[in-house]
Length: 114
Length: 114
Image (cartoon, rainbow over all chains, first blue to last red; front, side, top):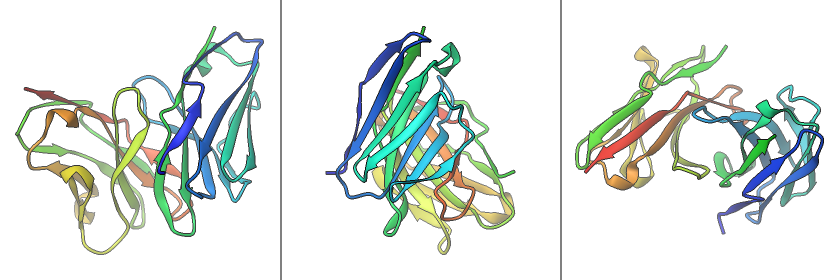
């Protein structure tokens, strides 16, 4: 199983809502990532978890709150977002002690903030 | 700062024709370089990667890339494209070698004419 799954596929939320994005992998990977991709732009790294610990935070606003409850799951909690946060949010995973550069990506969650 | 430039925003080729997508990097040391492909509505898939050694790298789906230090380039090639190759292609560099912090180029959209 080389699949990274993300739910939901689409999410529309108001600026006062609280929602969460979920990412799951069962490849035994111990590094997981969140990327943000605006339309017609490349992905931009937001967070990296390595062995369930936050190792990289790319100065992301606090209205985005990541969580890694276990080695298979990665959440992104959203609160008080702005319309400019509308984007495709991609999750990825890799195995740091085997092949750290083979990042497996999920299909993404398309988020619209109204 | 380390960066990646893809000079071509959009390329159109005929099915069966050869393909070359350009990528230039700016980095002091030998970078870790990657090519990813993204089909519409999908996540990213790793095509190939370069760390060291042989400068001609073979990837999946019949793609190859050549690292040229003198030109700071890592161009992607395919001898004969198929309609299914239509997608967005991203060149990326690992800015902290081994730290899995990827920075992507702006992407090249490939259209295939029948």
